[in-house]
Amino acid sequence: MDDKYTCYCGLYCENCAVMAKIKPAAKTLYKEMKKAGFEEIVQFIPGGDGFWPFLKDMAEKGTCISCKDGSGNPRCAVRACAKEKGVTMCALCDSYPCGHFDAFFEGYPMLKQDNQLLREKGMDAWAALQDERRAKGFSYTG
Image 1 (cartoon, helix red, strand yellow):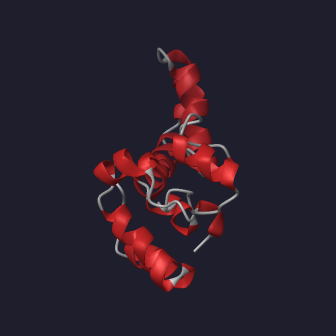
Image 2 (tube, rainbow, N blue to C red; image 1 turned 30 degrees about the vertical axis):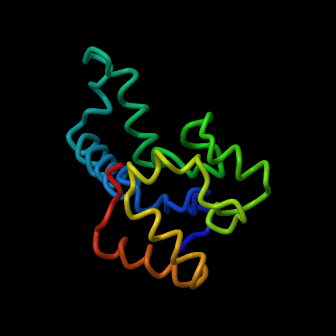
């Protein structure tokens, strides 16, 4: 597990569909299109000048990093609150759960249970759960 992918809210970026599914698909598509010679002809396809650098960037760098490094919704109330309070993960905050999580729990029903695990058993147990999910091909659909 890479700590830089732990989100304030308790989600784990490497289990996000963007990182778990889209990034590998972009790598495959870029590789196959390059092998087929698209790099030389993409400029002649409408929109190709913008598409090719976008696909290359997705394949090489990925689509995002983590909310702690600037990806995600810049107006995220959870992130703003966590940064203001100086907590690395909201589940470790004395005020957790707060009203910022109402929408998160609707979109990610397992999040409440995951954060409870983090509070009760610690980071190692939470990380093991995230790694286990990742190994099984799990991804958040939100």
